[in-house]
Amino acid sequence: MCGHDSSSRIKRLGASLVAVVLLFACVANADEHASPDELELEPQSPLWSCPAVRVVDATPARWEWAYWAASGLLRRDDGTRPAAGLGAELTTGVLDYPGFPSGDYGPRLGRGEMRAGVWVSGTTQARGGLLEGGLKVHLGALYHASFGTFDWRMGAGTGAFADGRQPFGNVTLAYGIRSVPSRYHRRGYCDPRATPRALAMASVLRVFVTMRREFASGHAEWELGLELSPTFFLPPYNLARLLGGEPARD
Image (cartoon, rainbow, N blue to C red):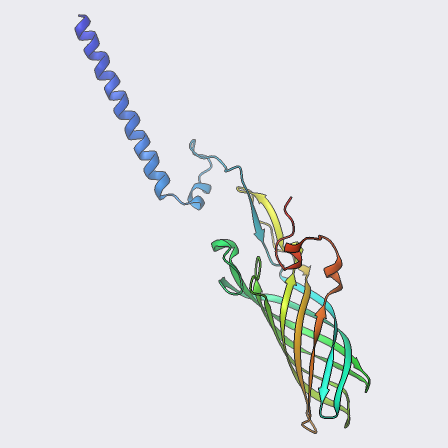
């Protein structure tokens, strides 16, 4: 009788061990093939729990604008003279993609972006003033443009030249830093992502070169200078933000 009871207990123990092994095998196999997104879709599962980590989102606004003060040198056939001006731009996102000029920040944050919009600028010099505007394209990054940001502007205007006040066409290339602190939001792993704002302010710091050509005479003028948004001097004060990336973490 004792031998029979021992044999039954051994069989039950063996069956229990087999069941436990099969259960662990099923769980391991499920974890191996389940992505984090798939796990997020089934919070009711008794095996599911939200990771105790925080993640950052970089969410551009539907429209982003910036203004700047400019200082540079104008070069024409009759000499070189200093110039100063003010400008502003308004852009919206038209494309985002993985890669340049974004750094390697992973599939979610390592994305470049193309923005397009309008710009206007006024410049003063010894001979008189220039008023111009037009369209622009901006190449940067959603999270951090590790390789800098690029701007291409074109348009037309009117201004004072040696031949008198004339209309002209223009092309500008610029390179530098663009910072939008309100893009960044830190959240729990399972919290919803931030909703894009309707409008946000950007700060720019960039070197630019502009070519202007008078429509009537065909004479050309070149300007080399620096554009800087005064908002760069506002908080938050940290190197990451001043380089165009995420402000300091909490």
